[in-house]
Amino acid sequence: MGNKKILVVDDDPQIRELLQTRLESGGYAVVTAADGEDALATLESGGGADLIITDLRMPLVDGLEFLRRLVKRKTYPPVIFLTAYGSVPEAVEAMKLGAYDFLEKPYSGADLMDMVKQALESGTPQTVTVAADEDQLLAGTSSEMQKVLAVIDRIAATPSSVLITGESGTGKELVARSLHARSKRAASPMVIIDCGALPDSLLESELFGHRKGSFTSATQDKVGLLEMADRSTVFLDEIGNISLPMQTRLLRFLQNGEVRRVGDTKPRRVDVRVIAATNRDLAVATSEGTFREDLYYRLEVVTLALPPLRRRREDIPILAEFFLGQAARQLHRGVNAFGEGVVALLEKHAWPGNVRQLQHVVEAGVALSRGKRLELDDLSHSGFTVVTDATISDEADGLSHLERLEREQILSALRASSWVQKRAADALGISGRVIHYKIRKYGIQIPRS
Image (tube, rainbow, N blue to C red; front, side, top):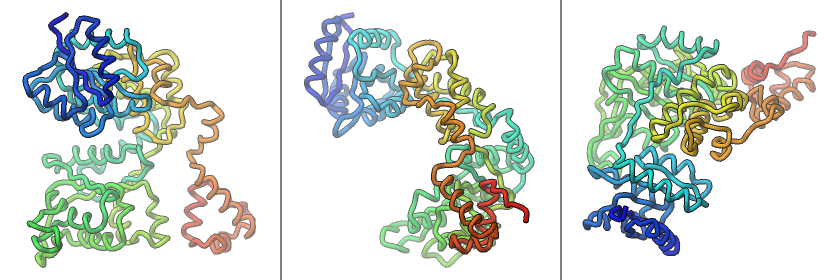
């Protein structure tokens, strides 16, 4: 045991000293470093280690950045992270990058020494990259998902534009990937553009490219992503967030299939299939004048509306099982089943964050699990809040607090106007088309006169 060397990395000198004392009492040789930069210098100067124990949050080079640099080496020792309460998501990210495990503070000395022994016995870790079977994430026995899958099968091979709608976390990008993978363009990679992440000036350059000198920072010619997607598919995520001027440029591209780089006079013809996604209601946005109606109709040749997870609860066990296996592989865990009552609890939850939230909850539970089964206690430690039946019934209609307030306002205006929709719309300051949509959205029943 005495020939095993452990590198301890922490910016707190007292913690370094405490860990060094405990580890040396167990028969290990210990070297210390104050941060990731110092640790890398120690390793590169010939002071190798059989195991690294590092804090997650440190000034200068933190634990995650230290690990990113470490895994670029051909070989590296097992890495254990020490993390404060509330940092579990970062610890899970560290394990995805290649860390062996993590301990959440406060931890016992016995737990630390047990983990050190297991890590040293494990040898050098191999980075595991799991290619998720994305079709499994879209699978389901619910009638809602069966309808979606049937439409995907019918339209995947066509060149038609597709508009994917649904709440955040329902899997819109997965649907786009599935459509591309089943199309005649699958040999080329799909190009993904997050329209909500960039200001207009940058988005225009990203989409259409630019000529050298066309603006201050344009030091060389740049090919736009639409041009790069020639003979492939472009996925425009959060299309509802782009400005009206950008909508005009995008509409022109959809109409004539040509792109013109910023600062250029020569258009270039490209063959691109456009798939767009949004969590906004574009029909309402067009009525409000924030989204061009002609662009909306260009995008919605085929519309796929993804249901929220609360409307397809029978699919939760299938999805949870998939996420369990995926997380166990990525995080090097031996978890292979759910404990008693876990799946039933997951089925009852409201899931405001939809499939993405379910994935994160299962992933965090697997990271915290120490046994072969993911137990209820693992979920509670991951920050998952156990919801009561009363909470579920309150959210069963799927409306947020603001949506419920809006519904009540519309109902109040309708009652005050003797259920005349135009008068109610005028009183609310909205168009007749918008109030008609809201009435359908909220299932408001208009009394027959």
